[in-house]
Length: 236
Ligand code: GLP
Image 1: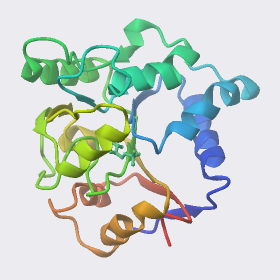
Image 2 (image 1 turned 90 degrees about the vertical axis):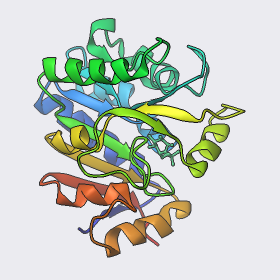
Image 3 (image 1 turned 90 degrees about the horizontal axis):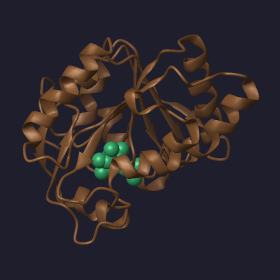
């Protein structure tokens, strides 16, 4: 796998353009989106870029990639709150075209089954966009995750909990729910995004080693329609 390496100064611009291309090509795109800090510059650009190019996102369905458990609804670090604040409210995605985890109910296992069922009812995921965890996770599929891992409740790795503090959850949650690797790999197209020098070590390990549970993102290397889109700082 050879990553596409873009200049840091234009990375967000080019990824945004490609996302607009994807929506233009398939207006009813079923699009799974991550949170974390990596995609935020793209989300900041996307609404105006859609308008500028005359592309409507009104028929797009957005699927949550993951969610923390134990944070109250609306807590700013919650993945659904971040997506709503940074993107969905600015795209006017109707409530019915948002497929998220019910992280507030009594039964998070049932919430995982419900998310997979809603995705299946929507026809499956067309495009899943992923950030790369510092430990090689995607979504909350932490090291040790098998390629057929289902959508499920997970215990968060220490580095993921540290990241959660950075997003504003202090004390950080211990568990989350994540789209499983099986569902991620079933998407028709996968984009793995990484930016910044702090991703250089994990990106190098990902590129150099065969797929294994030690680096969950490495399972993506078997996907027939994978794009790894990084900036030159991450690929240094
Ligand atoms: C977080 C999230 C992932 C995210 C990844 C990278 O813990 N669970 O969905 O993509 O780690 O985060 P960042 O983009 O902030 O580096």
